[in-house]
Length: 56
Image (tube, rainbow, N blue to C red):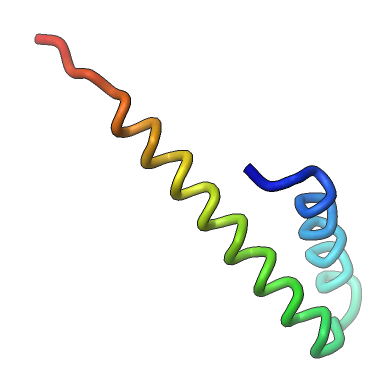
């Protein structure tokens, strides 16, 4: 799971990109953070799917 600070930073960059343009450095940071977030999300989701037991 990502830290609250990283999630907060993702949201800050998203808000700033809607209001104005991001610098190249900020775009790279945003891309890196999003990739890290998606990796974490996929890992957690896969874990949930693996723990599901179907009972008939």
